[in-house]
Image 1: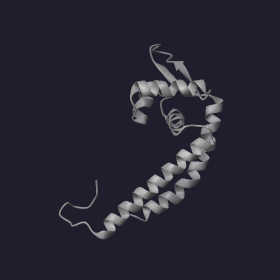
Image 2: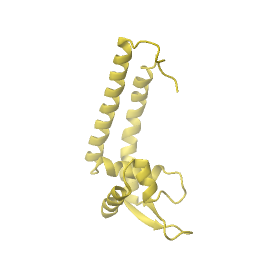
Image 3: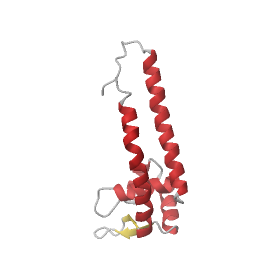
Image 4: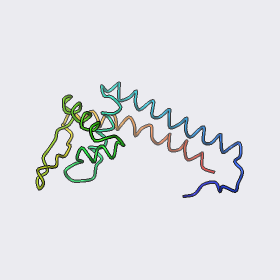
Length: 137
């Protein structure tokens, strides 16, 4: 991990770069939350859909794996999954080899909503990345 050595005094521009970095991140997160609301989702539901779609396991994540990815407790992931399921955004599938395990899978509606949001987000990532890149010394 590279950074500023503890022996070097912090400079005014170090604080300014950190302020710009944190502001850019907060602005992006605020915009992302608003985009989710405009699409009829809570930011948590949007993030759950992204976890399910982006998960690399062939059968999708379990609720426990989704909880880990979201950095939330298992019972919170269960509640979030139930809300997504009630909204028609995802379904639960039993594991074909271990029937105790349940995997999450997007419905067509969930996939369509996530795709629309992802297109909006990807359009914002490039300018954000350029802005953040300019902060490196």
